[in-house]
Amino acid sequence: MCGSFQRPLWTSPAAGHVTSLTDLKTTTHRTPRIPPVKPELGSPVLQAHQLRKVYRTGEVDVVALADVSLDVAAGEFIVLLGASGSGKSTLLNILGGLDVPTSGTLQFRDHRLDGAGEAALTAYRREHVGFVFQFYNLIPSLTVRENVALVTDIAHDPMDVDEAVAMVGLAPRADHFPAQLSGGEQQRVAIARAVVKRPDLLLCDEPTGALDVHTGRLVLEVIERVNREIGTTTIVITHNAAIAGMADRVLQLGDGRLVREQRNTAKVSPAELAW
Image (cartoon, rainbow, N blue to C red; front, side, top):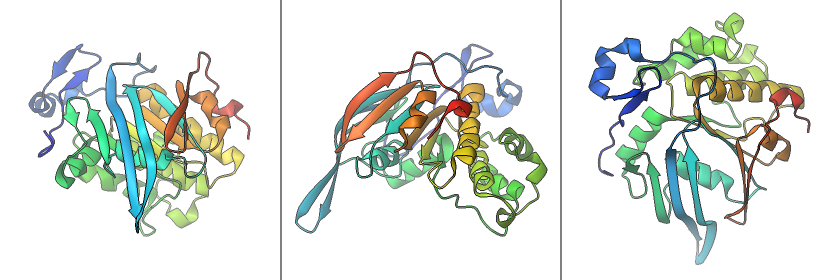
């Protein structure tokens, strides 16, 4: 399946059965809107086994990941902790199809991603993954609404743009340009842009790294809301251990290895976080 990537069958929580892509196109009333509560964690959406990534620098091999294995359940919220150089960004890039492992296996539902070609990985990223990075990567000449709408042209079943903008609390700023927004507001635009295509995975690389504590909490509240209300499987990587309290599960990387795993029985709301 590495040569071509087709969107897998989609399960409607409301209907309780599997619908084909063809059926989805002809029965758009089945597309779920925002449910009131986060659904129960489902079967694994990602399965990684013995992932290893080695970069060659001259004659020296640099091991960025060393035999990392993990399953990610549908609807799960994971915080991936680690110091700079621990391998967390490398792992996130591989899970998101931006990079490929040197060895090991990676599967998204029924599709193998290790060894997949660039066309298949591009389709995987376009159809299934939303990215949020530390730097916002907004187009300065476009308004909030226009920045978010860009993604809908290539999305299979996008949300309404204004709905996505409202979800991140920026409806009153929809016609403003990035230069007219604060850093936290720009990051929220980036989140709206990531979720407007209804991705299966939301992957966030240090989303609060350039923000102060108050603004960082606001951004985390938006990410938590996306996970809770839409049920989007979410992975946040950070060096900030305080954020771990809001996750379903916390993974810690050190020297390219998974060194600790913890499940939170009682989660902390973003408003309660302090760092």
